[in-house]
Image 1 (cartoon, one colour):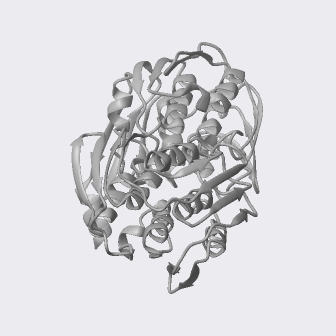
Image 2 (cartoon, one colour):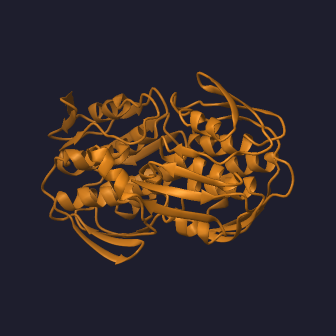
Image 3 (tube, rainbow, N blue to C red):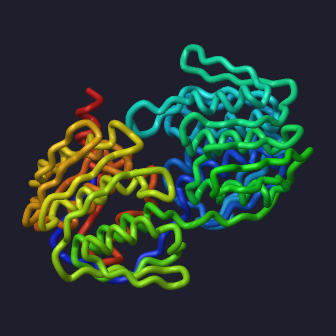
Length: 427
């Protein structure tokens, strides 16, 4: 069993460099299938979800060459298999992007129902609606999703709900469909724009990404390219929250400040001082943490992935804060772990009422999902004493070298493996 051991209570000080965006990378890697050639992907984060995506591509026949620690050459010209290995696809939610890419290039694809963090019901009905509108047939049996079409044709698709996954999957499937596809009520997150830019670099004609309407003019073929993934806004936001709660002073490099605006605005209201540069932000905090009201919403609203990190920060605010979760119904599962650390939080459905306490206390806790795990690390950094965080595999799905980066900021954190625990669990 691996876990993080954190001795908190000291401010974070120094510089940290943000890696490529997880949510863009796990869509762009499957999208390389559409090229049918060589793509060089730069600024890839070294995280387990990316590793799983690469393993899937390799298992399907792609040639993978590592150029450096953050750059891969992916050659999908020899892919002929259109069934994604079930065990691999169940390891992460984003495996469903292989459906759109395979459907777009080969007219067929099969993926098992995806895994990932349990944040509540995350249906794929809008994905299937898009595929069906483009002329594909589909069925879901025995936990497998299968799509096929003899010929995809452009269509006008209005999504019933705003869905990042469905928006990306529709783009992947439509780029080589005949005619002009119009997608309405789409997601507008930065990684949506990044995926669209990548598709265009491969020869697609995608316009309007980042707005409410995306128009896709189908092309006959696509080609390889070289592309650099955008920085991860949630990783950046995590270090911003950590700097604030520890009363630190941190320069966060390799960011796009525009992408951070919803996070920056709330942290400044909470008492942080944030200075923006072309590709960096400096975050420091010396006074009290002020209470806030936050409601998570699709972009450009406050991102749901930052919600657990803000809950940690507001746990030590001078007053009462309210967080309303507007995306996932199970996003507050981590609250019981924060309460173990002395937080005073009451949850009613999708609303959490947080009464600030003077300080958090060290405790053994368990990561319930990716962002909750990151939030518990931040809580441990603020608590004056030694905390242990278990089930860190969740965290390593989305944060590259978290221990190394935090140690570079002066944190006392280490990753340890306890073989005896693993043996005990196996018996």
